[in-house]
Amino acid sequence: MPPLPKRKLSKGRRDRRRAHDALDARELVTCTNCGERHLAHRMCPSCGHYAGREVVEIKKD
Image 1 (cartoon, rainbow, N blue to C red):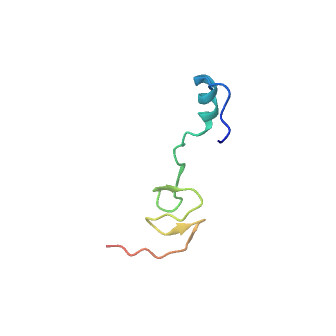
Image 2 (image 1 turned 90 degrees about the horizontal axis):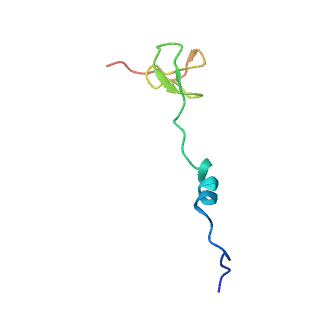
Image 3 (image 1 turned 90 degrees about the vertical axis):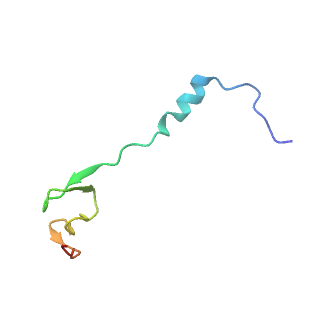
């Protein structure tokens, strides 16, 4: 048989262990070129700029 816990973990001890498991909201930054919000350290999906230069040409409809 596998080893089993000798005593029941209290709810407080269990919840303290799980305190760091919650997901945080993703941080958004403002694009310096168009002003749209996008994920940090990634190119802007609306204009294709990253770090002040155009890295992907986005076709306008």
